[in-house]
Length: 384
Image (cartoon, rainbow, N blue to C red; front, side, top):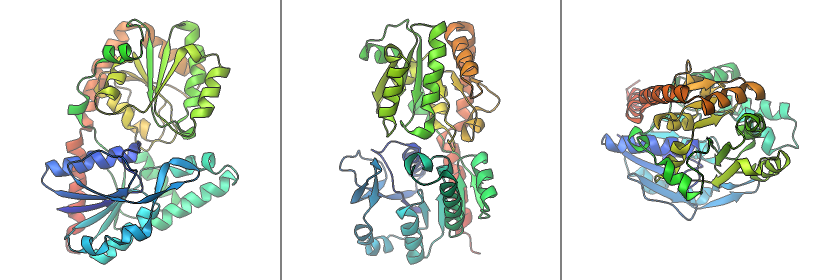
């Protein structure tokens, strides 16, 4: 099968969309299929086992991490793409990539599917604060309904996201296919190597949080809980991995709450062992985002045997299930802090949840989820 993917984001831009594309595309290549990805050119990137056509792009004024594809440059590839014999177009983002993906699918006369990765309604107001939140919610919902109407099939990473789109009025054929994790890449990490790198004592209690530093990730809540955790475990250290537009505000909050000695912001860590080492250094992984359509970082931590303390909202609720390998907390500072303190101070509990976490992660393997997506592709290719 020859698959043409298109996205407004990809590595080195770090987010869940990039990870999902990479995970599925690598699995497709291993299964003998061909993948071509159209993605922005960031000026610096690493090789992949699948073809990537980098399209010149412009900065977005409100979010310098992201780019917008240059349409004229993208169109220059039309003639070449038309000769490739693609079987299907898979769109991964709802911006210029959506409309360009539809155009290419029509030109190639092939089916088009799209993954709805992001719960836009819940975070647009953070980036466009001068527009009333109610207006932005209405716009996000209308936008989703309009775009989903144009495609042959819709993919969502979790059942809660499917239910959200159904409430919007989306009636396109929708299939829940989460992004799997490459378990072979999350078998081991060297926590002591990470601690040595950042001069963290081996015995210091360490909480890890990995996400884009964005307002919708609810990191400010994690910091407020850290104040309570610190009362019970004075030398606790919270390691925050990532970059993003909320960094300045988070640093100010850390200062205001008196947490400078209890926090470490590392920026992005590469998936070359550095991120795995960081996970493995953690006594526990903490998370409280309200907008995740899945929550891959939870599974990555669990695959490495790191127990989780997290709220269970949207996709994280589905990932956490009945709490195997985790302590599920309310979005309440006292409750969240109490559960974190339990993990930090109860070694028997940590050991049990660590074993459970590894077992739980096995059911989310990348090959299993990739095969499910390939089956959906095949269904789209059947004569109608």
